[in-house]
Image (tube, rainbow, N blue to C red; front, side):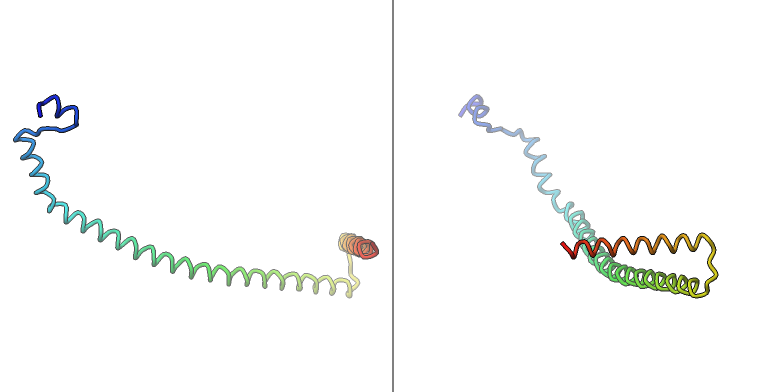
Length: 123
């Protein structure tokens, strides 16, 4: 084949310097081995870190759920205590005008809710 044919079919002829350069690159591959091992080591470290973070995340999610339950329990306790305070105020009879109006509004709201329920049940 001639040079024109080589160019048409994508064949390339290498000079002696290019061949030496190519063979040097192949021979320099062992110098990549420490870099590859370093990358593998870092990947292993990242995998271990990921596993540790995954465990910690699971533990924190469990802790979060427990704390959310405590918050819910505390909120229920607060509501119960507020109701007890209101009952004590009502039973004591020492009401100021603001407390009376708030109580009347709440009773009116309850009556409206009961009326709505009665209407729904009668349909």
